[in-house]
Image 1 (cartoon, helix red, strand yellow):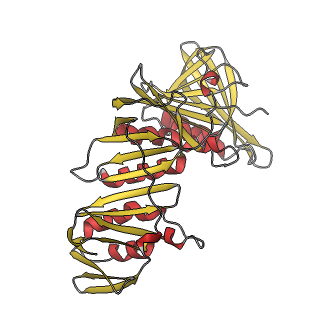
Image 2 (spheres, one colour):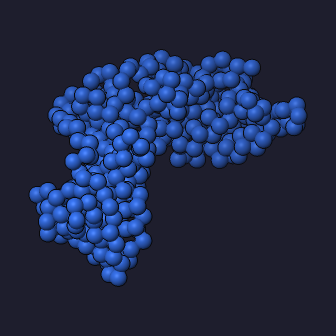
Image 3 (cartoon, rainbow, N blue to C red):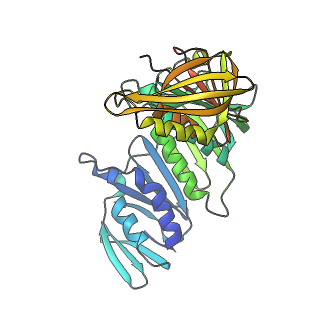
Length: 380
């Protein structure tokens, strides 16, 4: 195995692939990145057995072959090299020689024969979305997924294709809050199971990170392909493929908990509300993170009172101007969950909707119809 490439290309591929490698005493090969050269193509591959990442890289190939190197060491070393051509060659059976200008080094690796095989996935059921739509959609929902593995299905993001509206629906919940978003599907073939799929949140966080790296390139594509197979999903963006297992099980039927009618609706400035909640958070009970919201209308104007109190600290009350429609109302919410939800919207105005203090509060950005956030109340 022998090849040459630019420091920029190799460093980028290593940044894409090396992050998911793990320290594994029983399977030390999982610490390594695979350098694979076939048919005059150079690919870097990594896996933690949950996710497989493949990154193609432009290179001058002199001799084909494959080998693995410790991912962190290899990546850290390449990132420190000057912006010059890098020459890499396999010598002495398990040693890689790396030369770049005045820098010369040798790194010991492991045979590629020990590297896990990448599962094959059919591309019959595949659809295409705009890359930035997809990235923003994930950022608006993935944070709401549970970090607890007791209910594995809640640790992922639910996806479903709405073929009538030609939309991709995504949702995530930890049972205390729920985020749902929809984006347009550009093209699709085959048929995705009507029950939908559940993708691990960690996979999607890795996908958005990689999109961020590739999107900076002037030649990057504006589209991503997503293929769904038996218990697997494949994300294809430019020269990178991310293959992940799916979470088994049925996602909760969450649609019925989203109210269709509301007794009270408030529209107000998002940044003013966030600031008021942050101030109120200083006076909340540490075990509840409780912030009290009171909605009332006064003639043509409305008022939202944000308050909190803690016996050992003190109390706080802030009055915000708001457009209030409907009944006088109140609710107690976890301030962390509420701020998380407010931050996903890019609008100046925010809409809060509720029925009573024992049912969910629904948050939407004014003008953002495809995204909705729901927070369950705290019952004192």
